[in-house]
Amino acid sequence: MKKQIIFSAALLALTACGNKQTDRNYVVTAELSDSDNGQYAYIIDYDTSDKIDSVVVENGRVVFNGKIDKPVLARLIVNGARRGSFILEADSITVGGPEVKGGELNGRLNQYYGELDAIVEEFRALPDSLQEAQMGDFEKRSEELNEKYLAANGDNPVGYYVFLQQAYEMDADQLEAALKANPELGKSVRIQKLRDALIKRAETSEGKMFKDFDVVYNDTTYRLSDYVGKGKYTLVDFWASWCGPCIRETATIKDIYNEYGPKGLDVLGVAVWDEPENTLEAIKVHELPWKQIINAQTVPTDIYGISGIPCIILFGPDGTIVSRNKQGDELREAVARAMAK
Image 1 (spheres, rainbow, N blue to C red):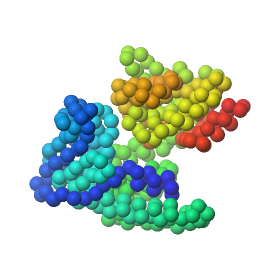
Image 2 (cartoon, rainbow, N blue to C red; image 1 turned 90 degrees about the vertical axis):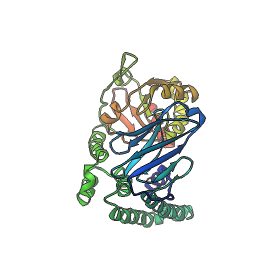
Image 3 (cartoon, helix red, strand yellow; image 1 turned 135 degrees about the vertical axis):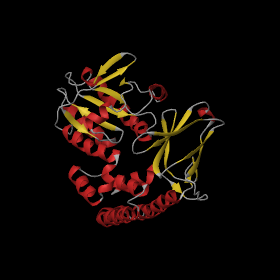
Image 4 (cartoon, one colour; image 1 turned 120 degrees about the horizontal axis):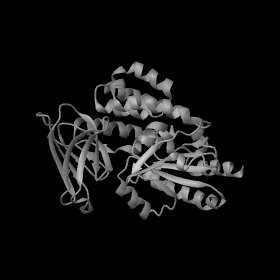
């Protein structure tokens, strides 16, 4: 339950206000910073990744004006970096800071988060000695909340978003069962990709052999097999410059690199879903000393069924996957066990 509700609560913080518009026009204002001036900002369809609107940043802000046929879950992108998500609907909407304001559906999503946060806070207030014993009850309450909002919003982006929070915690069989109950959501591009990702994830789970991929950057082709399966344990970090959890996990990877690098461990970063210039800047700012494959985009994430980053995989000397999706102390322990051999 912890993983699901913390992820759910952290992704968006949306609040409702503004006046309802009836002509299907939207006005989206995003408060950015002067350092963004001159850059293009885009509204992207969260499901399809199609560009809906674009404008140049001026005076640290952007204002989008347009017309939309139906509401969609959207994402704000500035200079290739993700700056938040919201529901694009016919209303005046403000993006920036801790809240997104405006729109009936954004208001419903805000209500969902309010109820979910109340469950989370109640759970966190329990003494540690009681949390494990009462975990099942809180999981059930969280699931019931999701079911309530999905039933009431199955035909709009609120239901789609709530379903996604459940879907990313499911295995392939669970996802298929859930889609039988909500067949309309099976038409979602993202859900279809998740179906495929679950298959690919099973094919690249612990104990399986690595799958190679090619990435072209600056007219040079880089392959995973240039680094993996060469007789050494290799820790591969799939990451992006805009991903806060990715950057935070680099502290763990640095510790591992400093301790086990001299003992024969190789470390490789693979930058996905990112602009090369932003990747290079993050490598410099965060002082990442290991080798990197730049501009991989969706090539490795499609092959390995990666739907969230950071995804860190430890490969054995022959290329067998030894550990996958571990972070923090669990990752340290996995590397320690492998290197002890």
